[in-house]
Image (tube, rainbow, N blue to C red):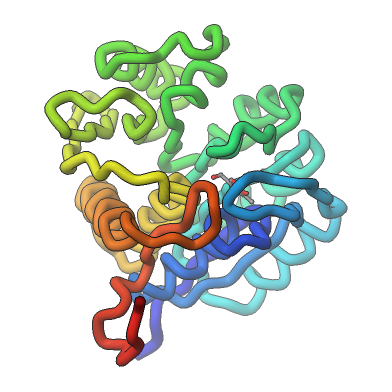
Length: 276
Ligand code: PXL
């Protein structure tokens, strides 16, 4: 027996909450061997992104090809891709693999920092979306991807209309995340547009500032369940449940003065550690 393996192509968060760090924790927590191709290095903490350096697109491509040449990868996710040249390098590097691809269209950080050049949206639409099995925008990313004004998707009905429009344009399964919308009756709803079906996935809304890395964790969890061979809709539902548990488990943590990380490993259970 060997564990299934997955690849994340994303940016590094020095603060450990989002990006590559969230993805590798998620893979490990869900029983998947994680590999990574780093696109950018951010200097960051819970208060925000201080600066970022983008890697040479050739180096991004070389990381991907080194991993794919040797590791039995069963699914891929993308996070922060930063520039048009990196989106192009990633699309070319993975286009022949035929592997399930989860695209988290990272545009803006929780703190408001820009993580993607606006001119890279065209490369997403023309090169990456045609390869994507699943695309996981939040309400704001969905608006930007559809060419709508920022802030134009503010209700679950608008999210549904937008998700169906993106599904029609791309042919991909869309997971439209409702976490930034105002909760209705303390319930958070994410929408899955899956072929002709629209499935609403609900969780109790957890009131906490510690949500940094939520989107990264969700898309990495979907990739993990794909790598494990779980069928897509069940994998998405289980991924949402994992994100909910990870948020609930860190709701009262105080790591940093801003938006803190999630509890990826259900700590302190089974670690023997005493958490104060
Ligand atoms: O949450 C989106 C995201 C993705 N990747 C990196 C990030 C962030 C948010 O801060 O820092 C590297």
